[in-house]
Length: 296
Image (tube, rainbow, N blue to C red):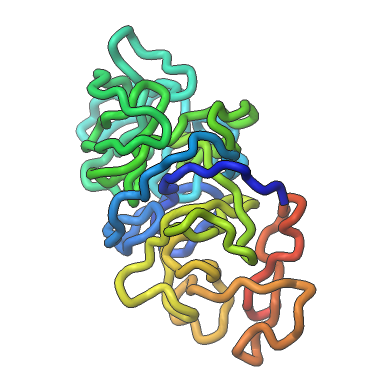
């Protein structure tokens, strides 16, 4: 696979689900992790090298897919908040808000774990790509065109500015563009090799859409090992993936080891498991990636 020459420090928001999704949307849940609610993660590591290649999903812009999935809304048109009011959506890539304002992603329903819509807000900061920032309930200190990513997209606190993007359009600071959360969070992310675990220090390589991206691990305390239940793509320790159909899993999805399809037959500990295909349509360089699961 293509290796990135430069790396950016960031956290990918791809939230909780009661069945770990890899299509790029965040979903409601209550476990910590990448795009989950709680989480015990600290702020992302600081960034020193500006430039990279982004990864995360094959979304098609506002109103497409996402990896923290279930609470996402389709893009375009207007959303009806719980109180019956109408909130118009803007385009975070085009930044089509009035002068002095910016388009940012936010959580429509109070208390939601992941961002699911966009709106125009006052510009209150000038933090740029890769710089530390602070996220509030409906705004952040990043400059227009950037999103302050904390451990979960809907969480507040200290994070790092990610670049908003439009799928199919090159990312200014490198990487690939993925439209997470049904297009409510289109950001640039770094791709990686889950077998090599070639992400920057402090990050793991996790499945998102038909690819793998670098992100901060988000397993709840004491969990994330083989066989533990998982609710987001980051709910597992690096080297594992959140999938259903695994031995001894008492939930819809559990953490299970990554393996090589062309590797030896004894890669999986449980005799009922074998190395099965991890991605439906993997990019070049990831066609040999599998996970320990029960063959259908």
